[in-house]
Length: 369
Image 1 (tube, rainbow, N blue to C red):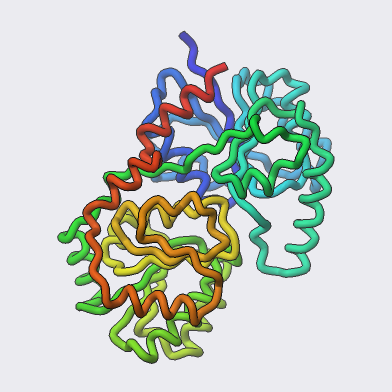
Image 2 (image 1 turned 30 degrees about the vertical axis):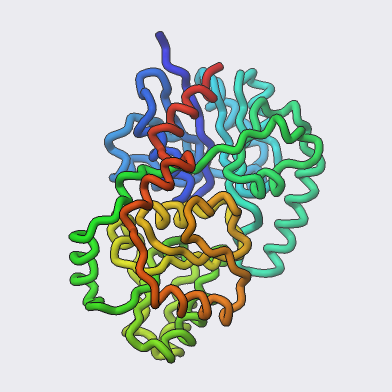
């Protein structure tokens, strides 16, 4: 029996989406389902961390805006390779040429998967222009250009799909995690805290790309004010991105270089969650906010912005708050005096349906032709 061949379109320079894809694929029947990729992300081909998977990467050397005819020729050739499913991972609309080409090629299943709720662009003029273009294309999209509509949250569905897409055709697909990997472990906590010389400090932390979306500048300002009254505190920032330079300068300007640790990307973020006492996610917007799900699994109390979808409120220790530093400081001061039983985090997240082993089987059923 031939496997169902699934071609993923992924954006360049992505991290969250590749983690989603490969995390689920690890728990799927790879004899029945074969993943390949179409992308501008040249790093995906032969990426070291994915050597245990068998997949092909079709690179897109140009965009449709740069060379429309060359782009169409390349995509048509790729789509002739016998794929059963085209899975388009989308944050915002820039066009629907790929959907038209997939329909022309007779791809049986075309999935549009919404992963965000706004445009992640630091430049305000570019962000406004891209957002306007997104809304124009959203209104013009014809629902017969796809067979399946997925979203990681209801807010993400509303952002990507216009009223011409009936809401009963949209499936909310949970961005699940390998729950056991995040289970609280005191030995791991002690090891990481020793490595970082944290001692018995009250440790705040966050995980995510250093980008406009994640709003780290708010976090540093917040920590600066909290740290003045609570000097025995540290802030861990796990991640990297285009705004690292700006963030480093902000930390230096506030004389926080000893207390704010910019740790870069880590392949073992679950261990750094163990070292934290409170998780913070001050995002300007989120498709879901998977980092908060991971933090919840590790039993951490979490403060997230009111722009993070309510779907992440899996357990009783997640606070949704508006982006007002005074409010966050008030919640932090309350949390600093409390003790939390972190061992129960995994069970609560699993009961909420975010166990990747279960969701991988859900995907298998949805991929069937």
